Length: 181
Image 1: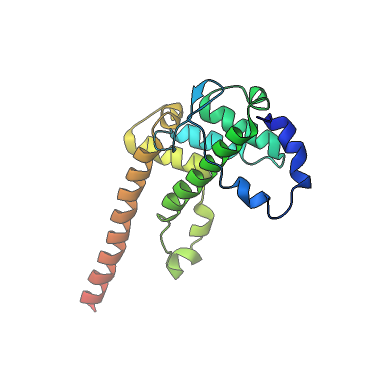
Image 2: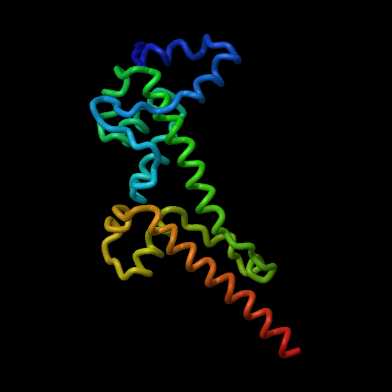
């Protein structure tokens, strides 16, 4: 098995027919002596953030090493010596899962009214910190680190409940306004 560091050197020489085949590699059961999760269902909100940050670098090797290291809890430097097939399989799973989870969170975006847009609701996006702060307030948590240690699914479900409740309240206000006319 070719180490990941050696494989990365060959990527620029691969044909356009070969590169898509890399996306088909699946993760191994174990890598670097650690079990690889089959998905990110058990990840905490903080782990999702760390995986997202690891993927932001423009250096493919560094990004992959950070992702796999974060996923299984080994130093990123050690990942370079692991089998390329296994590393790429892990990266594929993380990428797929992050896209799936991202779509779930994006589905909670509400459509804004013209009045809300005019009032500047578009400037109310506070990113990850905004989510952490909202959840902390919602649950009466003082230490934001506790939120980062919370399973992402719990935060998502709370966001979903609040989103659906807010959407209902918007619809209800419209019904009340129409009935008063």
